[in-house]
Length: 265
Image (cartoon, rainbow, N blue to C red):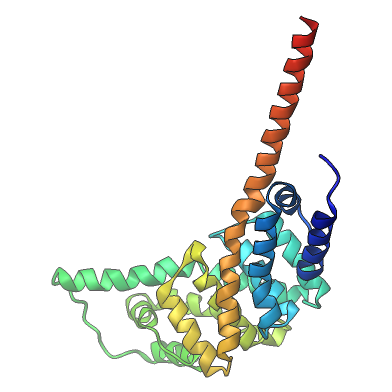
């Protein structure tokens, strides 16, 4: 590899200043397609420069997205987790992020119970809906008190399997008293997990936006979260560019060996 040109060095310094890191894939892009790296830097940096979220909140969102079971991008998780700690995040807050990402596993479950109810009705197998028991009403009231809404999937789980709804509610229980994320932060993290293209959940996304607005979260904050979720697309470069660089180096090495062998012949 040749040394960087003055233009490349300036681009690298500007990228590190804006983004706070430099990785093998950015090094590869700098050498192979600096114009694309510059375009990506401006695109990915726009939300951070124009949006109202704090650096800590931004890093926690990236921790959630990279750590999500729908993505599992370990190198990005390690990078942004360390940056979150540098920005003042606590271990309790990061565990709360992982807790919310764990609850993301309910998305298919909650969508599925609604589809099951619809198909049972279509097949003429409507289930009787007796009055809720006192125990069921207590569970319902506890959910509404925490989240301020009552989605259809909650009604279905509470009626079809109240024991499951009870453990579900315990999983989702607000643990802010233990030093974790406040409710606004929790909502922003959940919004990002539902909005990201790796696990796009339209129903969950609408629910989280409604909750965000009820909590007084501004539309600029919501828009910034939506913008940030798109940045995971660059992981095609994060994985692909180093592989491309290795392949180019191998080809160069093989070509060099061929020339040396040809010279001896």
